[in-house]
Structure formats: structure tokens, C-alpha cells
Image (cartoon, rainbow, N blue to C red):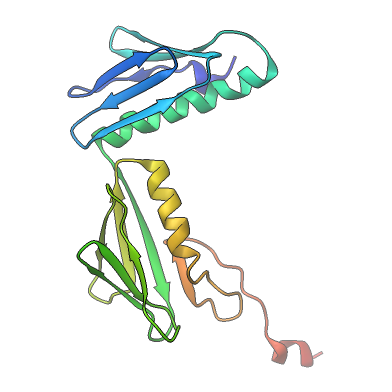
Length: 182
């Protein structure tokens, strides 16, 4: 039995959970999320907790058990607390700004990179214009959007310039000068 899958999910006050067959809807103060789970997984509400159970012991169903529980737990956390992630922009002249519903970044190209913010994601930039803070209640939407933003100028391995997640370690390579000193 999956240790993650069998642990219950507590439903905080102010959160309503609706379960229809394999669709789970979670509504809270920050928004509403829904997830369609596989038919082999069942979600039940019991004494203020959500329990995720599997209907068989097949290998595939066992692997989906913990995943399904985590997806539902992320939805509950998202509609109550929300998620926050940070990006850092490193490089001379690299900066960002939020203009209305757009993120505008100078990343060393001949033109500014403009990215529209999806519905449900808010962005803020610090005073130096090098640290971006994104908040959303949908963890998957936030992760997909940040990967898209990071892909506009991923960190390069020689100088470390580019867009990276806060705290991300970029492995640096030695340049040509280090190779000649043998």
C-alpha cells in the first residue's frame, strides 16, 4: 500500500469538495479547481477528511494511487494558501517589469520579450528588477508558466547569465583559458 496514497487529506474550513464519479472539484477562498482522476481511483469524504483509495492492486493502479492523492492535496492547498515561486534574472542589462497583464523582460535580445500573464497568475518585480515573484492557486499552471518564462533565456554554463529559479544551482564550465594551462 502506498504510504503517500493512504494518508488522509484534511479539509480546512471554508473549503468545499464535490466528488462526481472520477471528477473532484475543490472550491475555496482563492478559487476553484477540478481534476479528473482515473476510474481505478476512488475519492471519498469521511469525517472532514478526504481518502484516496484504489479499486485494484494492479501495478499501474498502485503507481497512480500516490499521484492521485498528491494532486488532490495540491488542489486543497492551492485554494486555501496558494503557491509562490521566484525567478532570478542574472546578467548585465537583464531586467524585468510588469506592465498591466504583461511581463516585459530585457534578456539581451534586440527586442524586449513580452509574455502575457495567464488568468490566475499574478507577478511582482523587486526594486532591482531582477527578482520576479509569481503567485497562483493552481500549482500546475504556475509550474508550466515558469518553465515557459525560464525557456526564454535559460542559464548558460559559462557565465551563468539567464533566467533561473531562485536557489537553482547552475553547474559552471571552465572556459578555454582553463584548458590551455595544462
